[in-house]
Image (cartoon, rainbow, N blue to C red; front, side):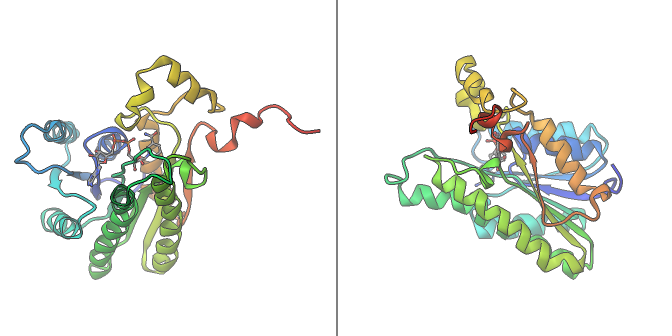
Length: 269
Ligand code: NAD
């Protein structure tokens, strides 16, 4: 896609699912990729380390540079270190993809405060702090920039039992719009991609269970879950110069989920 070759991208949570697919797609488009992963290198038992190494190998095979950067996006000091490392190694961050995300399931009246805070601090505060640190460099270098937040259909569909997740993605809509407006005149575009139900590890609960999967898919007008590659394609488009006049938008990539399948048939006179 136009304008991606040679760009430097930082993708948070890029060792699995949608983040990994975005890393590979942008590498195929000619971007150098900084892969953020959460766990420390010392945590040898963690499979994320292996996933990170595999992701770097996949990216190197595309003939671009890969850079693993450890960092927990709920920690401000990690974000500052991570962003500075990428700028030192690559020279700039042209594209920031705020993908890292978690969710916890619990009745809203029983949710533990720490669990609530944790989801907000990864999904929303972390996305903001990554954007803040990246924008500082983009402005200082007088460079054009693109920020893409990976939101969710739950940006607009309330999700009972997942109140912190719903709030985080609802907040992401305004984060996207506010930053887009604030920096539109300074060459920085900010958009969001909102996936519907997508086959990734975060959905392990239903992905490998045919009955549960059928229930999920019954709510999707196109009758199937999405793939990480389909999300990555939307990210590549918004990151490219093909989307040069688009800012402050959320692109829903959801097989029609936000059209509400239950209303397919006429339901009122
Ligand atoms: P995933 O669990 O495979 O990926 C999430 C990634 O975030 C993992 O790599 C994880 O290590 C990383 N991460 C978690 N906490 C982190 C932290 N503190 N610091 C750094 N990285 C951290 O799931 P996914 O489905 O690929 O999710 C990616 C994004 O897509 C999330 O923001 C999620 O909310 C969003 N999303 C997913 C779906 C879906 O159906 N899969 C739907 C809508 C939105």
